[in-house]
Image: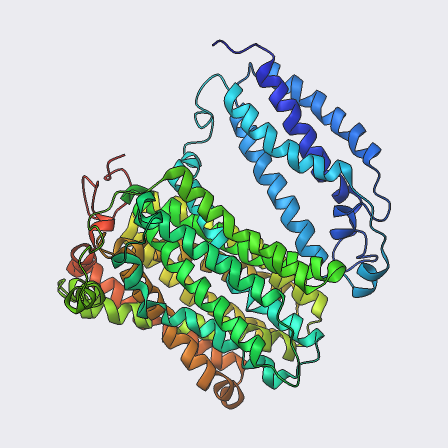
Length: 585
């Protein structure tokens, strides 16, 4: 059926109106640090303050008219770029609104009035509608107009990886900073609050039960496929655990019910992580590992930061029960992505027979397969040591900021807001360079950058209180971390065998962080007191160098290629795991 000529411009009009509706509140936002901070974020989400839907309508029509001109002048070319770019801009605006709202003064949230912001919420609906309407109305594949370097991010598997990341990140926020805020408001002392770190420790132990995800076929739901069925079950478990935490009271006289609830969220979230990682690796072709890992990182950061901010905002209005119940909806994107894409190709069906021997094979199979590879022990040593220096530095930044006299507003703006967008930029660069440079060189570059970035905090410690120095250090560190997060995760994904994807990736990801976190908790504070911040961050740079040299040696000897699993080679027509043009489409 031939589409009418007005269909595509009409879709652009709807998109432009949606962007206008989303952007209007930011026309009157005060710059960070100026007064009043109240005129932003959540006040506009609910229509409080000076927000008028009529103003939104007028501005929306003006931008919509410009959109029509754009569509006709360019003869309906480039429309997909506008749609995707618009969706990205709209999403960033929403994230900014929620993040800024999370740091609004409590007095503002308590005194502002609640009015339905019809224009804003219609903007969100129109944005989604415009995207899909424009996609259907486009005269060709909607991806065709995208720049060549951006197009792979919007293939089905990388897009699904973004949805998977959203659902993977939010449970971590529920038992991290969000839970800390809730416990402080409920009058729990600091010593007790720090004990809740045990709930996060569960993530480092997920390899202990990851074999179940690979080896146990679920009844009834198993007809949907091994990965999809576990996505549904694990997602339901996360929703149930978060809902349970919503209705659990934090009583200073009896804190154990809340401890139990937090550990249950940690267990459910870690299990969801196992399933999500396995599904992500198996739906991505080797050439897509960089882009898919990048989209997954985008989703994880947005999911964790967004859920944490949404929880604070909703809690300020409606209480913690409503906040946790709303955030439980973040579990849905992964389930929806799994149902849409379906079961990925699998290379080892789950064991149908029962018995001790079968169970033992499911448990030990992933370990045996990995350590039978040439140089497996060298690869394991690299996994264990490569991130120690970076973890030691990252987990002590806030101590440095406090001792240098930075205010909470400065930390919120530079470390949270600026750091968030710097990380997003690093993720994008990582995906691009992984495809263009290949896996080996991009991983080596990322290791060097993550080591060198610690020097910026040594410089900040030497300079003292400096907003410019803080912005530079945080920007550099987050770009390096975003870049490294993508390419290293892509490399770790390529190390897995498609018969044991979930179990092996759980083992690798746990090993990559456990030493750094252990050393930070046991030695970082005493090292800072003994050496001072400047020497401490110089030391973290030196500690990061062994990982760089081990990987460089692995490259020179060909061990990187020989250690890659089937997840990084299947479908590749050239060098294993390169993920660039040498991989088949």
